[in-house]
Image (cartoon, rainbow, N blue to C red; front, side, top):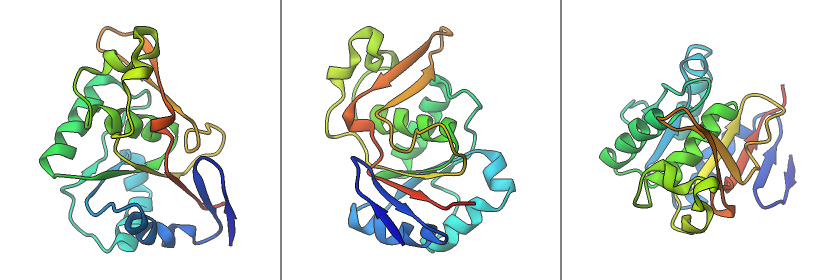
Length: 178
């Protein structure tokens, strides 16, 4: 197995998803919110993740990630995160799911609307180390969201903004080559 050390720890190998439970334990994530989309669920990828985590319940799964993650989806997922008393996030999918997870990680742990964390609003300095930890399980290649320090999200007013901070970089990326 290849272990690549970067700002994000990258586990890269066939079967690397089997390390997900131990990575959660290492990061003290006991109740993760899983952020994904319906296509990942339909493809059976979510089932694999749940099996590795030894979870069957759906109470901590947000699978309504839109193709372009938006503020409404962030609010919905934050509400689920808080209701389920989650302590971390696992993003399973492409850049949209990972960017949404980053927005949730900030908004679930900081006061204020998503807009207040946008770079254009001076929000980078408002994002602190109390941001929820994110583990990324990318299912597409090319976006780089699994190791990036930013997320692109659409506000309710239609503006596309960047939420950028070293605190939103996923702690771990679990990459399975296909």
